[in-house]
Image 1 (cartoon, helix red, strand yellow):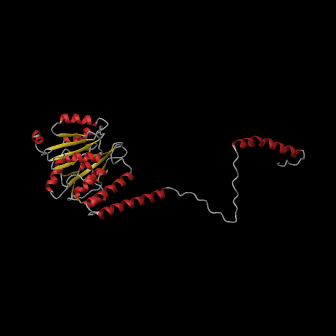
Image 2 (tube, rainbow, N blue to C red):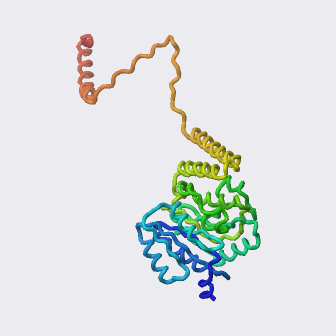
Image 3 (cartoon, one colour):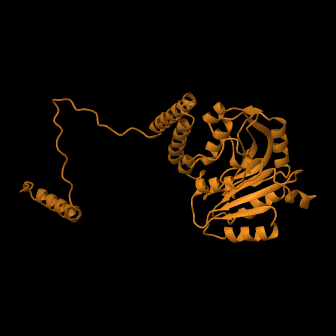
Length: 330
């Protein structure tokens, strides 16, 4: 059955982009190969000239799985957005499932469940599911994302408020929004933009199953960036989206911008409360003259005074004993 499926046109293309994922790429690819489906699946991997052993690992995996894996080995490093665009353009399936090279799927029925859901809901533009965020350094316990999610469907209005879709959980209808626009090459949160481009075509379905792990690690392309970087790039992405849709979603975008401003103001107030105010001496009454501070003695002067103090005290006592007046200071 498997050999028959791989010879057919794929119903799902697994879009995988990778760069310097030597430690993780094998698990990512194997989790895609382990999918149990009633339809053919291809795995299209864009490798962006890694400087570690990622490319060699992929070549070996390709050797062992020639029919299912298709490698796009770029001649030069073009960056994440260019890699996504090239890999998406090479996907032949009716559906595209995204999986970055440092994440992995944990449910072998994930693709079957999402494709069945999309087939049953033709008005859905895309589908995602709950994921588990895993901190590779052990700094935090694994956590569900998005937290406390209860909706079966979401809209583009929801997605403008925050990006609640982990890339490794997204499956969408191929070509639903056409080719990626050229401005996509200029932004960093490219997965969020893809989610918005999809959501403009219809609701986003959600499955409550936890079917993937999203790794947070020091080499993460987004998760390890500073909050300032993330906010700046998000605003740039929203500006491109605003122009792309000719102002159709201006209200939602303005609301997100206002939310960011409110967040920043809240952070400023928080830090103000954490830092004690600088000391300001109380004002002196005008009729009181504050004498200038006495000059500090040098270390040599202090040493001389320490040595001479008992000598001067003995001389004072001697003069008093014979009735002489104390010596006046010169």
